[in-house]
Image 1 (cartoon, rainbow over the protein chains, first blue to last red):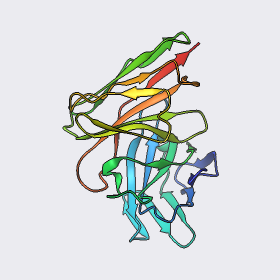
Image 2: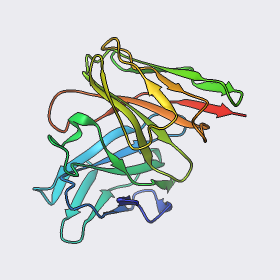
Image 3: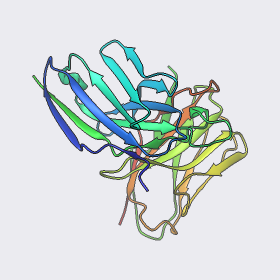
Image 4: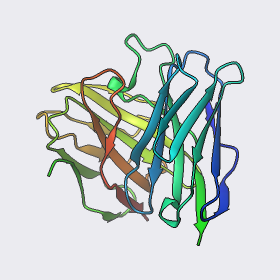
Length: 119
Length: 113
């Protein structure tokens, strides 16, 4: 049962344009969502997060939007740069844990989307 | 320069052998985790530990074992009971703050033939 899904395995974007990566979830108990970026043969690095009490969080070129009614979140990268080319994972936490949150690191990850930004 | 060190980067073993993957952190984090990544799949939690001498099973613990004798170290043993051990293994840690993000090591790619 895939509780977090990234339905697009890959996305190709021209440098300078917007990249939009999408993620859907099924567990309504999730209360915190994160995006990680991963280069080949390296560990993922944290990018941006959002709590379920918000619908938008922005950090520089990266903005995450959360639509709780649709159980959908998206990551916008504007403008996209070639160095953004990587695999992007969305992740969710909560799900009814006693204390919830990533302090327990029990994240549920999506399958990942490979972003390629062309010069 | 704080971080998480996983060694070795590549590991090859024969089927039927146990193998231990190392994970060390100098971030002074209490919590540590092991995730597994397979092609086309997200990361799946194997085991996690919130404090020394305590650990819990994650979603796919069968065929794996861990220990947490020191705060800095959380080794993972892949036993011969693990049916599909070939994968990319990632160790992570997190601080105490609510919803503090995971910090990952660079992973160990294990190939069992």
